[in-house]
Image 1: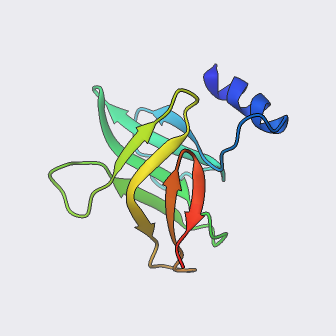
Image 2: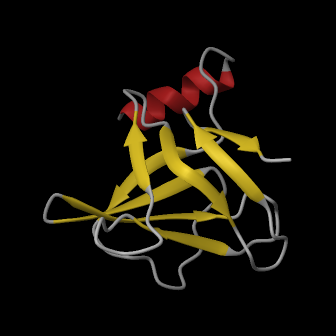
Length: 111
């Protein structure tokens, strides 16, 4: 419900984001993640994966491990509206090779 309200607020310019979190129960595999969505895979209350389409426009699906015992690993925090912050930055080495941060749902490109 919050995501629907967030989308409406974004349309009116009252809330800004490039990505919004949608929790799912299992890894999407080859199912394409729509642009603008970050699918947070949660199993038994534990965040496992963060999956999204590359914001560089190449269409590559990016899957980030959130497992604290694996390397590399990332962490995802979500604000009240479902906007993600990802730490550390994401450097996609395939296709367009873009490098970016996600802070409060906004893509910040590295130079």
